[in-house]
Image (cartoon, rainbow, N blue to C red; front, side, top):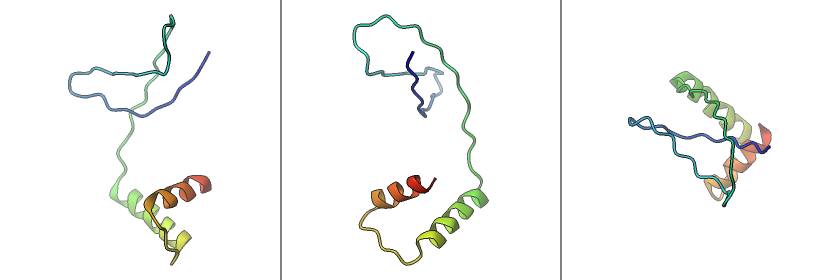
Length: 74
């Protein structure tokens, strides 16, 4: 059994589309979903302040570098 976790959006038509890296196989699929709540302004502001305090005056060459470091720190 393989497990794959992803975030996606279901539009107004209510159709969930999945593309899997699997070719020519019979599958049994189970879908468990959890709505993702939108973050409040205060949550986003706290997150930004935490990142700002953590990295201070450090200059990043691009945003990908910042995202990588932030994900490693959890």
